[in-house]
Amino acid sequence: MSRYDETYAQAQSQPELFWEEAANEIHWYKKWDKVLDHSNPPFYRWFPGGMVNTCYNALDHHIDDEGYGDRLALIYDSPVTNTVQRFTYSELREAVAIFAGALSKLGVGKGDRVLIYMPMVPQTVIAMLSCARIGAIHSVVFGGFAAPELATRIDDAKPKIIVAGSCGIEPGRIVSYKPLLDTAIEIAQHKPQHCIVLQREEGPADLKPGRDIDWSDAVGNAQPHECVPVASTDPVYILYTSGTTGVPKGIVRDSAGHMVALKWTMANTYNTSPGETYWAASDVGWVVGHSYIVYAPLLQGCTTIVYEGKPVGTPDAGAFWRVIADHKVKTMFTAPTALRAIKREDPSAKLLADYDMTGFKALFLAGERADPDTVEWAAQHLRTPVIDHWWQTETGWSITSNFLGLGALPVKFGSSTKPAPGFNLHVLDEQAHKVKPGVIGALSVKLPMPPGCLPTLWKNDEGYVSSYLEDYPGYYKTGDAGYIDDEGYVWVMTRTDDIINVAGHRLSTGGIEEVLAEHPDVAECAVMGVHDELKGQVPLGLMVLNAGVNRPPEEIVHESVQLVRDKIGPVASFKTAVVVERLPKTRSGKILRGTMQKIADNEDYRVPATIDDPEILGEIAEALAAVGYPKQ
Image (tube, rainbow, N blue to C red; front, side, top):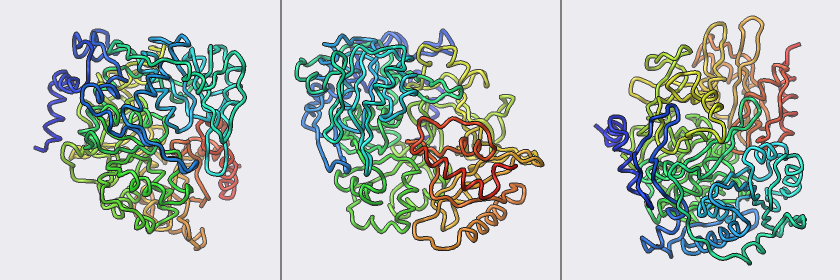
């Protein structure tokens, strides 16, 4: 039996003992009354009765209890401003304590909400930790988010204070945040008392007298603030995720369970120790940024990186390799879409040769399904483990992974390996019955979920139940479809909404995408089910080609259609594909398959607030029209 198997079995058979041992790894002002309160299902609570502070565990503990104040805590690397800045743990705590004092001076206290609307700069991390320091609840909204969407979050969270950057910086352009914020506040019914604005020299903002305060003025008049103990079950943050009704869902993260789970993952999932450098190439507006740019690395005493740049174009497809080499990164976490962008620009990974990668030990992928072709490409060139692991905003950490700290399991390309200790994962059919190994169905987690997962939605217990718990009683509905094979490996194939029914055959669009990605000229692709009078639905593919491919697109389409026919068979009824310049994505890298499907089927759709570039939808509509969609 492997160490993973032993650990997983222990978490299954004695969950409360397992998590009690993990909880002893963090600092408590007061220990819990019980490990798990299951008196009010489905509202389970971990470590009730305890008192903790997340900021103390992330900063003060390493300085005051461990003596590591001079250890490097945070590196800010910004190719768009040509800046690198470093903070030791002591320096970061000093900045956090002062900003916490600034918030307190403006009347922010335990339980108050602070909305953070910032770019990828150190002050964003400082603002988040400052909220945690004084027991306030932060809600980070991705910088540059559209004003109407920002307004809905303001009305739901009702922040006392908003902390904002004057602008964000993208390759070749400045994105002004302040006009979007001003419009959002005008639209919103709830009005914040003040806005603290970080003025960036690349795009300073006009401040509204009486409401807006310059960041430098706020900290210039502040005194350092100590950590405030909060209850284990008090929220440390709210993070909004898009709801199917158009109303965002406020994911709540409780203080103690969040820390216990994240601290456990750093050693066991990522095999990363105190003093080592861990880099999540994401944005703090997403859950990955919360968990693995800010909290987990600092809870573990690691060095974390805030990167203000792109995988390509800042300046080239070697950007990630440069950061890894410059800052001696041991472990990296990014989205598959970033790798596909690098692979498209530099298919032979020639730029890797320019950098010393000897200290780099593992690359983790999540955020969207990692197609086997991309994973194999990365593993071949990096010569390190490349690990696809699956998790969600709601869970806060990975549901499945290959756990390097527990001894890596054999890799199966296309599988996110096995469930994390604490997650009791099953595949269910539409009647909520368990299916046999290898049969595709709804991936579902038996309740209660482990620490760190959402206990409910912000001020919306009813919405929590209806969104996640009603369809499969006794289970959390992930919304993802896949199967577990006869060796216990988990294969996450697609969203349940993306299972298509072709003449009575249930097919995964992810399985077809996997085949298309094998074509040597295809950099990335997307498949969605479109309406068909005869068969109900048929798959339609969109493909982006590698840089430098000069062959006629029609040839590549013909070969790709044949490839699907050879690998999956005529049952897939895959006959139509189109080559496009790029695919519409969210800023976190998820491909907007549902939006494209609506365009193809001539259905009404909303332009998603999270889309990276709305103009791309017009390009997609033209490409689909060229192959006869929508059907007349």
